Length: 280
Length: 279
Image (tube, rainbow over the protein chains, first blue to last red):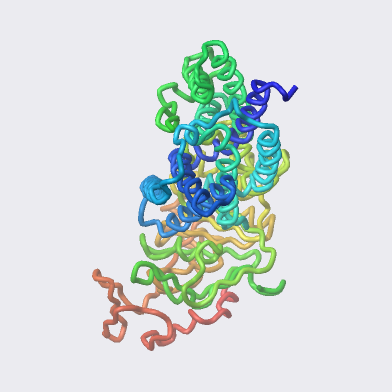
């Protein structure tokens, strides 16, 4: 079954979507929508360093993403700048560093489009193993830290006063983010993973009445977007990665359409839907 | 760590230093099981900071804050903004930091008078309703130490009396220690065992005077309120000047004021844990 490249693409994309949905909910809740962009810029630096030191690309991207995540946590603790300013600072600093490092290596031919959009149709069986095994580990760890992480998202001081360790949960969450970027970047591209984190979560918010429900919905909506996008790209011969993002956008737009009272909770007016958190 | 016979939480000369100044300094106090301690003081006097030291959110920069080992804490923060992106029902909010059975959740919500809101979205609650939900969440945890930061804000006078009665009944039922921050400088809960007045340091501490014994206060507050509220009479030996300096009873002016600086004759009660038997 997995001998067909299109089936492998489907399996890989669904795997990434199932992991990205729940993580993306925390990205939306914590107003870290720009975090994905920052990590994608950091990924470029990771790729450049991997070429320079001739190490595994995935490992290098994970290491750089983890460093940038931890730098964000440390800078946030200083609390002299807001989170978005810090993310912008880290994003452009790591992008510039990556380009400078690449400039030293005139012998390297660098495929920027491949990095940004990946090539989901070129996914191999070992890639599938990395996505599904890595994804299972990420989801398992997320489930283990779910309560403290969510409590700290609602109110950090409340969580800390009642015996939880928000710092601990935050660091693990940042490392999970770095891991997801690293294992999926080569395959689905950095822009796609950012979109898969935010758009399904933003879509799920409309229909969810609880955090756990929203995480599951986001995973399912992401998986549906992957399937719709890949079949669309097959049908109309469009690039696969962007087609998946367009499909996710389609689901998001559908969620904005006012529906009967059965689906829409009366306390939320459609005008308050989060257009700004859907970018990325 | 404190042993079973020690207080639930004990601050000893504790202070927090931030951005070049002491937010609060030299705080010595303790909360025993079943004891209600009320912190009062003007805005910015370090009440919340002191509570956060007791809770372990802010480690003191000098002195110490020690909690009993395995202490189960429930905290009602002063303000808690729920982001609209968070789909959070009252039921789920009750289980935020630990599992709570359906019956316990229903009991706690009923006790604070918001049983009908169990399935409501937290974001849609009014200020008073949310305050009651916060309190219900704290009760449902069945804590050893209950810390409340201005729990009666946004609640009207009748509601305030009812909440104070409720806090007292929680204390009676669970025999938990209660650390209560009050926005009112003079009127405190009658069940308070000890009042600590803060203004960057402990200005004075003591027991409140029961309102119920005075006919005038009874007329002022109403018969039911009079049994719940009490008046605290401050006994300051110094005055806080507008520029932040302190004028002492002996006429001297210093930049700071803290126990043991030689300006507090007869105020060694601040250091003395033994004053708890005054209740």
